[in-house]
Amino acid sequence: MALCVALVSVDTTTVDLVRRALDGSREAFGALVETHWDRLVRLARSVVGDAEAEDVVQDSLVVAWTRLARLSDPHKFGSWVSRIVFRRCLRTNRWQRGRVSLDAIVEPSRFCDPEVSVSAWQILARLAPRQRAVFHLTAVEGMTDAEIAPVLGITPASVRAHRRQARAGVARIIRGGTS
Amino acid sequence: MRAPDSDHLMRSFEDRLRGWIQRPPRIPADIAKSRVLARLPEVSRPVPWMRLIAAAALVSVLVVAVWLGSPRPAGEGSGDTTVAFAPSLDSNVVMWVVDSRTTVYFVLSRDGSEKRGVS
Image (cartoon, rainbow over all chains, first blue to last red):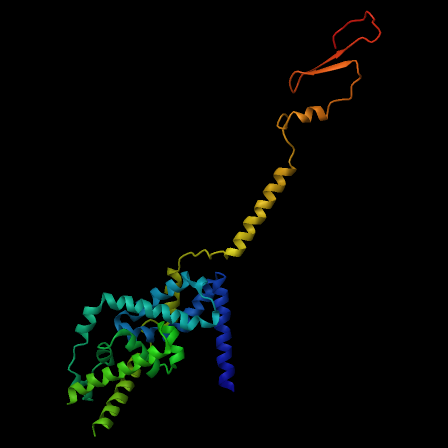
């Protein structure tokens, strides 16, 4: 019960901040940035990697400010701004496509060796960007298909398909080194 | 026996993924906030279309009302205006409107008097 009250109060705060930001309050928008920063950086990390994530999120938040009037429902600010970040990640990903694949080159078998520190990103980067995002939002953020769908701009059925492909891809990459 | 190994590897990957992704950002939230705020452009929020149309209609009505209610400068109206404001004349008076500023009255003698003059 206490948790429900806490969640409702956070949501109310966000909605209030969004309304004030819509009226032009930079202070309110700053509070929104502070509230959502960590979560958005995590999402960006899963799609573009560590090096670019924070720059991408900062750029996305500036874009979000300029488009705030297009947000129809203040309750949906979280998924709306996540979608802006995700699209920005896709664009960044296109620019750095070659670089990601080079960074991701690692012998998959070394992932199984506990003494060798192979970044999870080096496995994740071998997946398609949408598969990375679905994997992250499911495994790390614990979101449902219905919650993930508006963030990525796809249907819940597509979310399920991307998750299947992502799991199969990760398993293939990991097994590839063990067999 | 491969399936449990795959499950184990997948769980291991997910654990490592969580550990990697959930590290705190290099830039703390309060510093990110000030950086983002410093980059925010001035945004003029678009006026909703219905309000814009209503405002334009109101301005149009006011402009028309003021134009209709304002006094006309002399000479702007039609020639009928002069006739409408002409004084009533006796039957022996002839009025000749030369232009908007000049009106000449001729008074005809009724009784054949010898008085003559120009008015």
